[in-house]
Image (cartoon, rainbow, N blue to C red):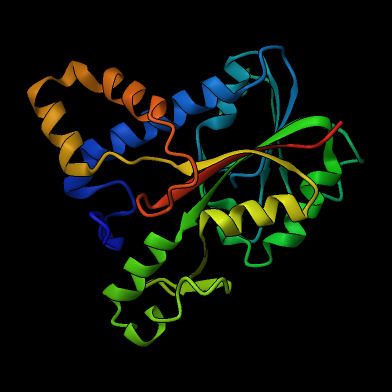
Length: 248
């Protein structure tokens, strides 16, 4: 069902080459997605990613929201970049229609079990024409985690359209989405969905085989992944990624 055990999802151990590829895909996808002109971008990844530094390096001004309920060291931070970090548990500090783009990477919407409320706030602060890039846990991942924990009786309930909340071995809970559910979440909040797709479709074994033969092939693998455009295919991949726009 899933070539990546839940225990490997921290990006370490034997799957290190795959995660190098995975993060290269994320960086290139963000590069392609970011607006061509400098804008004000809100990052909701909780201080766990490199996206603010990448966006600031591309000339954008970034507000990085770090949830005080999940304290941690945060991601890389360049004090000279156009990045402002804000610790908050909601978006009340932002006025309506105040940001040009929102990035919710690092499974941010899956960690918010009431993602509908979060989406309402995202739409509120987006300017008309503003865009959202979001990454969530997939049903494939949720089913694999439950199978690893022998929750077989719950697996038969998947695919019914109901909200799927999955307990992780560390005690946390994630909300997993099908492509249809993710589209509904975005559309119900008032966004126009541009696309929904798996973050990666290439398997770890494929990535390892190619990189073992030629370490310079990483760029080719990334381009192959992003140019495949497997929209709405939620039968593969641990994460789904979506791009959506506020009308106007």
